[in-house]
Amino acid sequence: MNTLQDYTQLKYCIQILYENNGGEGGYPESRRILSKDGGQSVTGEWTPELEQWVRQQALEAGFDTSGIAPVAQSSQEHLDAERFAAWVEAGRAGEMDYLKRRDEQGVLLRSGVQVAIPWARSVIVCALNYNAAGPLSIEEAASGTGWIARYAWSGKVVDDGELLPTDYHDDLLGRLRQVEAALTARSGCETRCYVDTGPLVERAAAAKAGVGWIGKNTCVLNQQLGSWLLLGVIITSLPVPPGTETEVAADRCGSCTRCIDACPTGALVAPHEMDASRCIAYLTIEKKGAIPEQLREPMGRQVFGCDICQDVCPWNRRAPVAAKPGMQARPDLINPALEWLGAMDAAEFKRRFKGSPLERTRKKRLQRNVAIAMGNSGEQRFLPQLEAWSAAEDEVLAESAQWAIGRIRNPPSKPAPESAPSRGGKDGAALC
Image 1 (cartoon, rainbow, N blue to C red):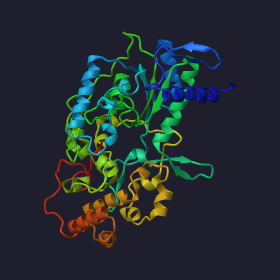
Image 2 (image 1 turned 90 degrees about the vertical axis):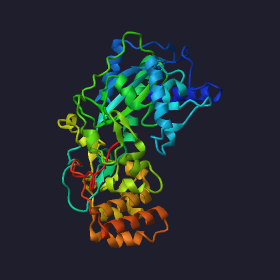
Image 3 (image 1 turned 180 degrees about the horizontal axis):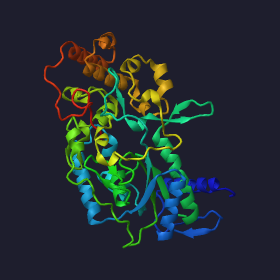
Image 4 (image 1 turned 90 degrees about the horizontal axis):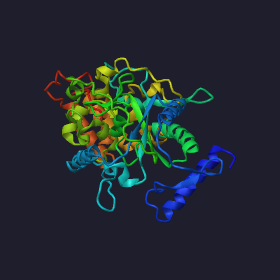
């Protein structure tokens, strides 16, 4: 083998062969594997020098901060697993079935890393700042516009100067692979990379790795970077020696409850506790079928995700603006015109959103969200589009459009709550 890529490919081939021959989740802890020079190396453990080196590798890959958390069957791990199971049992995961997956013994896969990956001993958590130079969702916007979550604005400039859509899942995974390849070449440990798809709760791992604390809005907060953070993880077989764990970041939310107070749907049911089934980010992206009618008015003009609980957070007032390639803001997605979004056909949707986070919600769900936003705008000019949708073959879109028509023709007499931000209540939303 002459290149790092050759070595990495061989490592994955060995992993696949092992798993296909009955290895549950990968190599046993005491395994030996080929090193880059063709010899053998034994999995070791984390040292201060290795940890500092990995942090530097993460910075060179474009991450803004990183940390390492141990994976252990501690009392805290068991408590976290019990809380997660109770959260799922209470129905707060909504229709997100990937959060409910269980092993053959019925244990939730995300209740602990070692449930799905027995050889796991530590998790490298890498965070990327995605804050963009643009308005906040709580600021006044032009009439008849919608709101797309900040992280979905991302684009990448190509050779001809065009700004093409990007998806943070792909961007972060590429950066993680760079760190992973360097680590496996140096230590010979077993690894797996995940961006939102791994059998763990990333924010809990981030807190244990010292990346930040979990705020009352359930987002990871970093004192210098704020909460505009995308997380990626590398699970490794390297144990963290007892007594050398990273100090957990102190909770600095204090008595502030601005995020809870600003959530129009009441998704933040208590400090640090989210009912995802009420979250507008969930409703506009994950939720299939009809959105519960009682939650439509609080959705305001949100058409994809939501940023309010981060927009009102004092820790984000001085959050630095990201300047990473692939994370440039696409101007057409900042306060987009509802009329423009509603008029998109399949070809236009594909051209604008293929390769971006919005592709995930698909055209019919985006139209459902736009119909509700049009209804909440109260503007008569949207009636022709809504009337056309009201006769659509898609029953969910037709019903949503009929609701929106009724709202425009018979607007509610009750004003929006004064405590809601400019996009709350009539024009507001919540964030998961």
